[in-house]
Length: 78
Image (cartoon, rainbow, N blue to C red; front, top):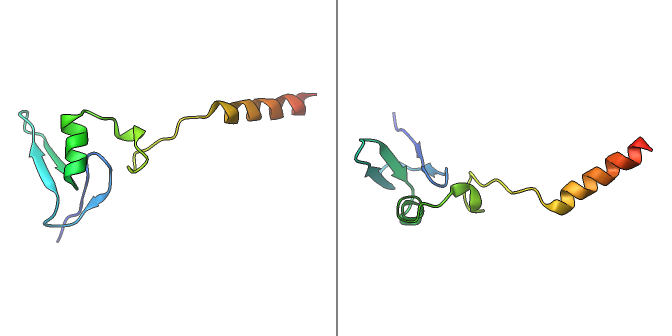
């Protein structure tokens, strides 16, 4: 049975016999789909939630969206 792993940075599937494996001094095995992901996590210590091209991306709430929802609630109360 072939196992499909997920990239530690972007969360995309890694096909068998592809990708990069990195072993930390603690013995933890980290798998990456590309050099771009490996460098982002290990060398630059980036947060994957801040990049749109990752599956772990979480958009921040825009102030305009919050203001619109507050104004709708105020209109319902009156």
